[in-house]
Length: 125
Image 1 (cartoon, one colour):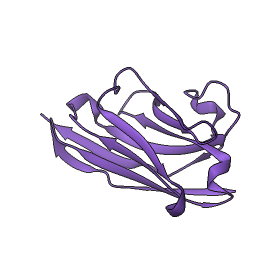
Image 2 (cartoon, one colour):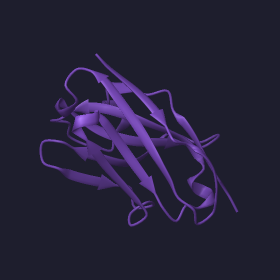
Image 3 (cartoon, rainbow, N blue to C red):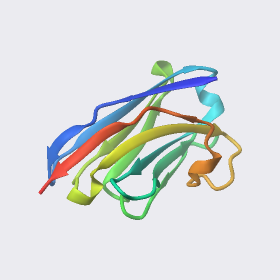
Image 4 (cartoon, rainbow, N blue to C red):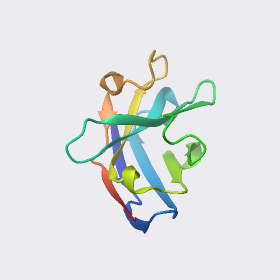
């Protein structure tokens, strides 16, 4: 079992930055690939970014490439999402999630086993 708790959301103006954190507890943190997803009001949940611990490889949705950075701190059992150059359409509830390291299709939310409660990010124009 893995417990995930997100923090760091808030209100920011367009062009600003936020850093989201996701603290993990339970089973060995390095056993999982970690992902960030988001859900805007009235829309489906979509993939944002992911990190595969076994290879160190990172993955990003096209909409956030060059603006968002995912990273992990194994000592703190925490994964981060640094969000720069934020836009109003980045407004959403952001969720972190954990999936088996061997996951195929790392952007597919239905393959993730554990989810946090979400943190609201609002970007004003």
